[in-house]
Image (cartoon, rainbow, N blue to C red; front, top):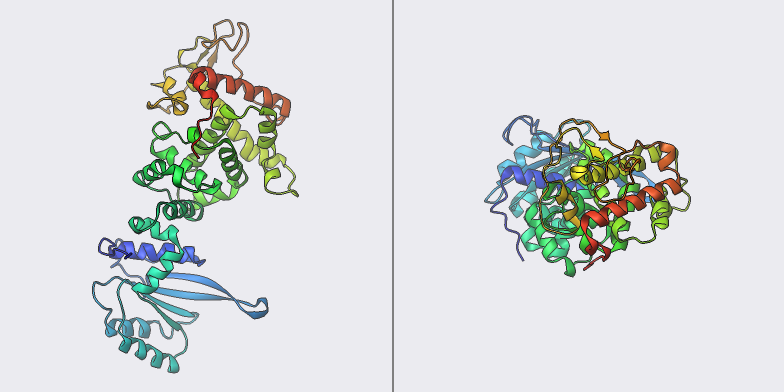
Length: 412
């Protein structure tokens, strides 16, 4: 199969090179666009980066690279190559000059480069032609999937989408997620790909069209949740550095936890897994109070809050001070029916009326709703208290969503 380059604009080609370098392990990559468009001044190179070389005897060297990206519909001319090289020679601290083209370079030009290097060995000059780029793209499907998804198998596209999420916090488009949904039964899923797609879904259609929690196995849901929780600090940093808000990750983890809560009958096991997720990935890690406060507690609070605000839309016992959720009952349809959710995120006030009736008859008269009560660290970190709260949250999901939630209708 051939890569279709006609739709790859010069700027897209620079972007492709950027992500390919990142996937290859280059560090401190800087895209020197300078202004708007690729024609702006770039100081003689489009990209610059560092690469660590490991030699014999564990010796390592850090190389400074300049990367000049040339998108051409015809063979790159000898004059262009010569101008790039002579411009780079003499710059102190430059180790490697890489010229990247989406077309070809003549043998005569390559011979000229070899002769030039005999007299000027520094910087080392490398040329990646179209066939070199295509070989690298086959080895790095996460980059290929961004620009040439039509030539990759659906499994390779899923791997590419997963790698792009974990490496660059990049989300697949809705049409690609839809393809994964349609072909879900023929794909080999793992926890990395599940977390990537569920995080993407949280900003696409909010689980109301494609209900991943209904078709993913309980074990896979749990592994994805644990992976996300354990790696939350590093993922949070990546989200921040990439300029992405962390809400998609938080929403995905809450959705995974809610889905597991519905189908996991052993809530004692789930409680222990939430309070100490590292037990599944490391025998030497001891749970810390700081990790609980920064990761576990906010995740649990977000879930209880989400359930409370959606359960209370027709409740006399709990009031948010105004109509915050326009179609709140549809929230629970994420686990059952195909409907949509509409929210208004302006400030609000929460009020509780102990003497009023609970709409689903879970909270007796004279008591307050556990979902809305303030939660102390010592309470949530106590396994018995957390277990009781999880049991209550599970009952809310059952009663609000319907008895059909009793069965985990997995297809993966």
